Length: 338
Image 1: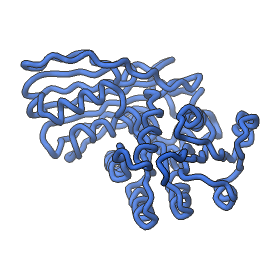
Image 2 (image 1 turned 90 degrees about the horizontal axis):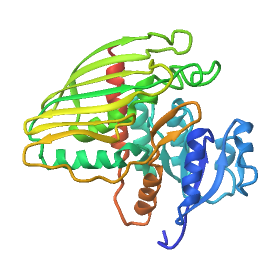
Image 3 (image 1 turned 135 degrees about the horizontal axis):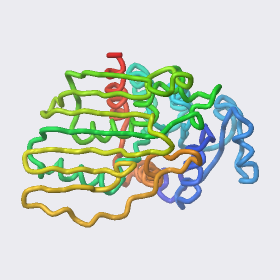
Image 4 (image 1 turned 180 degrees about the vertical axis):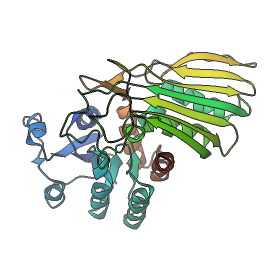
């Protein structure tokens, strides 16, 4: 690829997150938005005046004469595997919203096809780019904290009838998969990125106030051991009234204690480490605003910068397909204990 050429992107899925992808692509001087695709004509109407070709199916996009380099997939979770494999077989790199798939086997099929086609799969795990995430990754990697004793992750958000609309894909096992896939996989990713794999998993699940809205739990408590040492837990819920409360990680270790908190695990709330002073960190990005509800940090511009840098030979991939697989595998193992 000529380093002066723009990277051309096509997006399938033009809902809230697809619009975010389109906006970021248009803002990046090294990117070009080549096409948009959605099965819902009402979602495509928004882009009618953008001068971009619109398609009502992935198949029609892939057989068209539209030239592009990367297929961005921002569709319901249960479609990710099939659509990614179609895109890879058609010769495109992939930007893939979380989760990579809803099963480890599905992720393995994606990785196999990517290897066969010599294409990249960029898994969107944008929380890694938050200043607090980059900072904690650095001090864990450099062993500033010493041995890890306890890691506690709390994710308490609001998702109610404004989100789980009857007839929609949210709340279904086949398309959504559950809150660990749809809301909290970013934080499972941060945990794995920092501390590695887990074992000796124990779980408790409840559905406190979503019985008529979802086909799975709205609340869970998961405990485990890290293979690399230390104990961990994840406590999560979509049952918080009215608005998101917090997403936090507390680390108790040999040389000190750290807590990163805020609604989206984006603020250093406590740091007391032997012979260490936390530096002044850059401001974190605001959360993605989806109208009636909010999601994790709006760091997609970093994702696209990495895509461009990788395809132009300037950087290595930030979140590769194997890491995407590990997040799905961990969640699948947790859910297998229901």
